Length: 204
Image (spheres, rainbow, N blue to C red):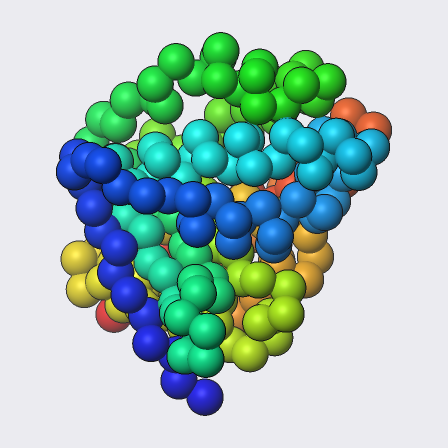
């Protein structure tokens, strides 16, 4: 099965509507193991998740590269992948600390802890960072995520650039292994799930 992938690569162009990107991220990721660790109460996740993911959707549209797949039936986005080309300096999201506090509510301490733990392991050599890949739950297991990954990996391979990500559950980790990533020792969230840093060298 093939999927039409749109490159929504919009840098420094405003206004850009990121609501639908945020909607896909929220639908796909707000009940994952890391989300449940950050906010065990499902009501808290429903309330705060959209604003949390909106921070990263807006930042990716301004300073990163966003891939999206469109459902041919209803025209909605079915999947998104948010990449950041860390081959140059990229500023943090505008007013990040304040926005994170407002967007995470009672999960702020754990959200900050997550940021710090991920930052400790993040490579400093030039690479592209996959912050999120998300597919609507009803469209998962159709190869959409793999198609988006393959699209960007082909660009990285031609450019001789590596990629980095963190896998937040064993199923995702297996997917990334199939796409050429090498798993590093897990980051252990206190009282929570492991998160696997993964590195993909360029393939020729």
